Image (tube, rainbow, N blue to C red; front, top):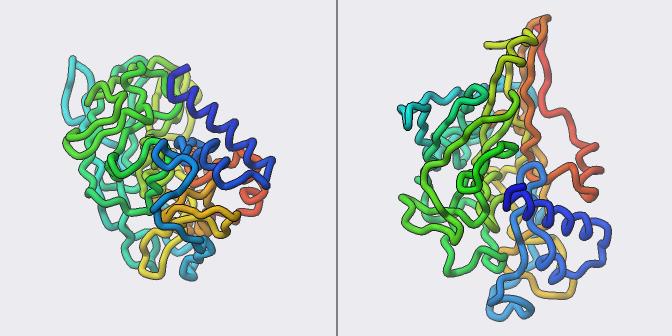
Length: 351
């Protein structure tokens, strides 16, 4: 088990405990659980040493998390398909990629103004990386994001603070068997041009051996304390490992193999992403401003970077490569009832 997997398990246990005890104090929550990242990944979220206990001079507030997105007509935009990334060259005779993380504007719905998002290679979701089982791949993940974060950063969380840059990234290939140095641990973060790096940062270029069965993986940001924010901003993409067994199954391929990233977002009227700057109630203790929330469910279903899209299909077999990359994990008891109430994310239109 890798170091970051062990940490995620510990944080998941803490989150489950919070769900079962609704009387847990605000301070206990902050000490014992992380904010939920995509598909249940938890970024560590205890109070930092400097702010442990008293909030001190940190601004406090009670935030309104009941923002609602503009009314959007459903099923008007076709589901886009993430592009497949081409290698930039060769390293040690193997495929080598350089992947930029950039801030861009992207049209997420016909009736929304362009939304500012963060994307790998300037795309939300990022391009798909495809490889074969047993073929080495080298990736240099490059942070070319602005210095100011798109979303509210709680600097009282473990791993954050005034002496840590708000915009920092590290990419984790979720579900892959990789060497520890290339695993994208939460404290192996880096800033633009690697000018600042986290305490466990070891290398700029990651090596993926791909010695595992054919599968659908995904890559996403994993920076300590802000995983949920960076993924919500758009830092996620598919990674496919293909092999002989998969080919022997004679599954639909080409345009009949469709990757689908299911996520949830809430939008402001100007098309910008909304993320709560704090909880909607105060339990008797002051909250920092901004302040982490245990979990957040957007009110708009987004598939492959489109809000409430449709997928036009033919009367034939398709292969769907589906990823639940939402803001909070459905595996936690606190989110299961909400997940069951979610509306359909896309509609199939037969032609």
